[in-house]
Amino acid sequence: MTAKLTAAERTAALAELTGWTVVPERDAIRKSFKFGDFVGAFGFMTRVALLAEKADHHPEWSNVYNRVEILLTTHDASGLSARDVALAKAIDALLG
Ligand SMILES: C[C@H](O)[C@H](O)[C@H]1CNC2=NC(N)=NC(=O)C2=N1
Image 1 (cartoon, rainbow, N blue to C red):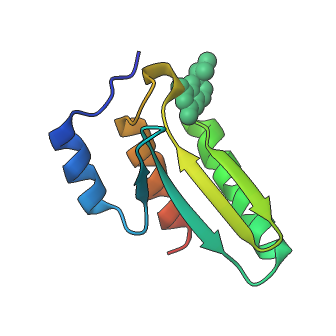
Image 2 (spheres, rainbow, N blue to C red; image 1 turned 45 degrees about the horizontal axis):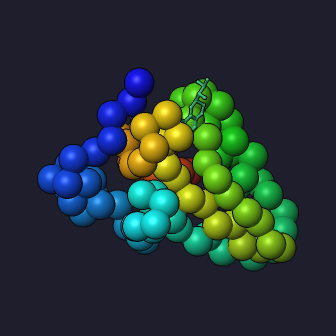
């Protein structure tokens, strides 16, 4: 079972992330990504999918044309955990 982050851990983790905001009602973090077109967005999603499967940690997400909305939370912990922070960092690293 993955543990939810403590308040102090959460503050420290968020300070290390760029563009991710807290969704308090879900105890989650969210970020919007915009690409040049659908191919750019879907290519990004395929790369995130591979990361997620490797980590056995999967995003809640949606795609509309060139935009991808990603929400990360840990279902097993009913809230934000270190696994969400690690996936957020890995997703951002895909984009350089
Ligand atoms: C059985 C499997 O390992 C679990 O259901 C994993 C899969 N992916 C997951 N993804 C997310 N976001 N939260 C989880 O708790 C989770 N659990």
